[in-house]
Image 1 (cartoon, rainbow, N blue to C red):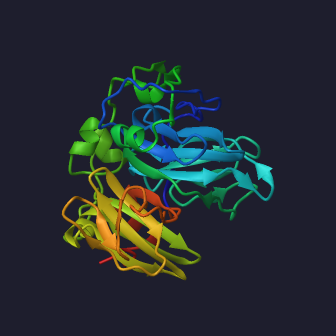
Image 2: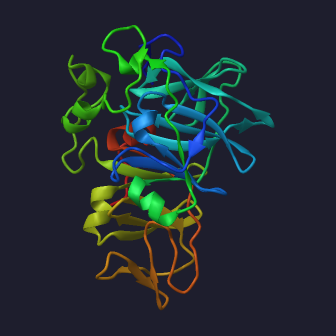
Length: 313
């Protein structure tokens, strides 16, 4: 694991006192990270580009909503470790191009995509991944009419500046648009100073992957492969049976109670005499699949963490 300093600690400010509302001024297709709750909460990626971490409490559970733009990695964690609630900030370091978080209670450092402490008093500890989804703002509002959305946190961030000095945040500016559109990946590609090698032809390095872990087992589901399989695949990850759906708004994983799913002509899936929505796991006869804790990230980042043989298909 290659860990390097890139920015000063907290140069990218985490959100520690999030506020929510009903309205969002972005586009319907803007991506949001969704955490179920009463009400459900949406965290726009447009805001997370400039903050990367939101420390929140959802229905009494302390959570960290985390985002690494370089790795395209969205993961929601329980902030409780051994009965202690941690508060996370942006360390300014990268580990294999992935965000390194730090906790303000001990100063320990954590690799975001793994949820593992890599340095400090808590070395070896792991965070618990929570079920979450990445979808569009339009889909979130349709599925959760009473849901709330993170309000613009404001402030200044070095992610908003082309220099090393923090600048006022303009959330209408997209700091990673060129990076997402280019073939290269990693910090050097983003900065235009080079790029990393990728020697496989069967998978784009920035293909979206949904990663599922169970104990020591891990399996990454590349979105293109799920789409090529008809939009739904069934698999086992350790002792967990899952079904993964590719939908128009993203990729989603659920516990599979032993059903066999087939795509229908309207973008849904048929199983056990019912039609199922691949984004919500809900059937037209009132059943709901349990969403699996998962990680959404680019293929190169999943391979960095789990190796080249850890992909489905």
